[in-house]
Image 1 (cartoon, rainbow, N blue to C red):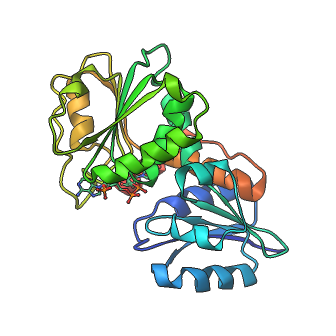
Image 2 (tube, rainbow, N blue to C red; image 1 turned 90 degrees about the vertical axis):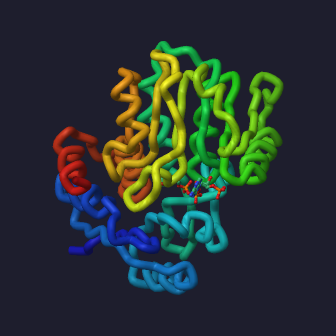
Image 3 (cartoon, rainbow, N blue to C red; image 1 turned 45 degrees about the vertical axis):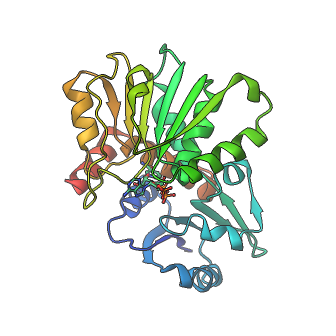
Length: 283
Ligand code: NAP
């Protein structure tokens, strides 16, 4: 019987949770398959991708720093890739075509939906302006936030995102996007309906995000894309103040669920049991 093979490529790749999730689902769904992590420095991406295609892999996941680099080798990109300028999923076709998708958009949307149900959508604040921030901005525009502030270390990168998004928006007059330097006064954070960290600040081995949320309004929502540790300083502070919050673990599971669907045409279940397995792995 044929074994269906998938790999996640990245550098470094040691700490990825993706093999745990996908191998769990393969087993649950009785699919004869194997999902593995392959350490891939950026200069090896082309060679490794070619090799895995020849070995009849079904597809790939890409993580840091390859989500943008893979675009050079794609034959087909959908709207999610064009919007974010990044692909975290590749599907190999029998003809040797590489189709790219970005499932971070789906992952973020699914994990945000319940948190903001019935909440005001006047102002959202995004910290960071990289690939993940693009996915987040795309979803917030879809969800009709009226004003969005992008705080970034390099303000030029925030302005580039703003320019690209506004260019493609049909109803650009209805939305206001503002770019600010992360070093500047973050006074308007106190009025925000939603605060999202898309930088690696707060992640294991990184310094904490330098943001004070003590004035954040009580009915705001805090979303930290980081899931290792499960509780960053930002999440701890939100919890202390009774503010609705989430880490990035649900987003991670949803983006994986969507990736799995693209390779196998099946939607695996996200369960508490799986979440507990991943949380244990992180702790
Ligand atoms: P990226 O494209 O490299 O962007 C990183 C962003 O963080 C940029 O805005 C960068 O600012 C900022 N940044 C980096 N180091 C910083 C520092 N020392 N101080 C202040 N800002 C800093 O990365 P990404 O793909 O967007 O990923 C960002 C984070 O999201 C990572 O931690 C990743 O693990 C997480 N993520 C989670 C999920 C999930 O499923 N939960 C999915 C995707 C990403 P500059 O523009 O100034 O460089």
